[in-house]
Picture (tube, rainbow, N blue to C red):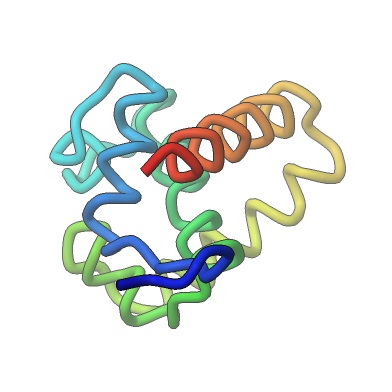
Length: 108
């Protein structure tokens, strides 16, 4: 039994499914090697969320996001930080996704 108020971490694949659902794509869409927008932007938001909010290591995020190398995730998180500062559409996209994921996870 889990005590009230204790947060349980969801499996990364579950989080990825919630993120994919928010954007109207599948987890496999996020994992594939597509470099076209919007999939690449969705993948960047997923990498950033899993690293920054879910507390995963770069290598673990890489494995979750289609077996990518940790350096790819470092680059994605770096891009995320840059875009959060100077790209309002990306910032709105990411913040909307975070809100959605947190609302869904609160209901579980």
